[in-house]
Length: 361
Image 1 (tube, helix red, strand yellow):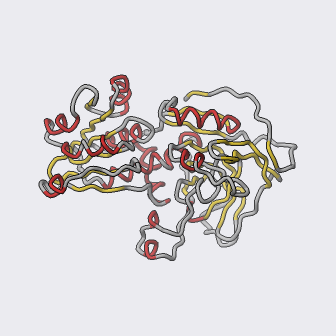
Image 2 (tube, one colour; image 1 turned 90 degrees about the vertical axis):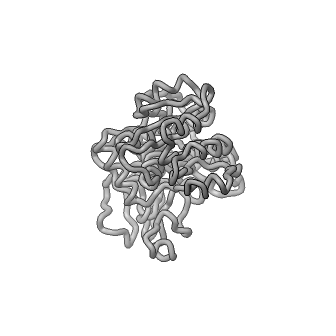
Image 3 (cartoon, rainbow, N blue to C red; image 1 turned 120 degrees about the vertical axis):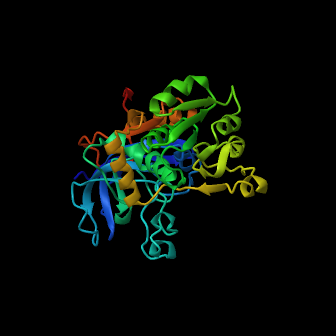
């Protein structure tokens, strides 16, 4: 094992710097992961732009991580072994002690770190993780294609499982982006009549290819009215952070329909009591999921042939990859990959970034 590894740290808000760090030893209950791929998620923007400049060492972002176990700390369950393929998502490992954990609601544990925000994440060749955060990665999935499934995949998969719809019901997906393109695939393979809702005509072809039966362009027609003409949606899954757009779709729900909110915004939703009481409609939030649920999402992805649409760039180009993701100049998902080449550098500190080229997939 190398004495040092490369990482992209948030040296100051909005700026990623390539540095060399000493390879750590996992503490009790932890594992050391040799990272192979890490997705760049929209939620990374908050971790990078609002990073604490006084934090030392600076935070390493990234929470869609796939790699192999390089070292085990004391007390890690025997199901985890050296060399095993594992992943880690946004939730950094439940405590197994709090009230939520005792009820089996591991995704709601209040004592777990938030990967990339309150503990270091996967924009690095190595990272430490709690054993309770680990997800087993199927052999059928490559590292780069599995990484986005640990956030966008599990988030949309679980939300659809909670939406209350049955096979044959109308389910609408608001937003055809990093989350939405996964939701469309899962919804189609779960047997729903899938309606994609976007604001641009040029994404219609992608939406239909990904699994939508119908595409509604909100720049051309009123989405809620169109949904009601189809009998109303049994469920609407919101993947965007536009509160006005989400609120405007409530009238598109069928009686007993459910709006499931995934996209986060600081702005409040506008919901009248009449919209909920008349027709017994509900609004529900949904977080990602537990490691076990993540494994279910990965297994379903393998069985149904569901994969993220993505572009791949090397760790050294994390600044450019992040800029493109933030500006929307990415076709659905961006993933960083590590080459794990031996390094002669044994000092902590900044490294020069060599030139690389983008690889589209």
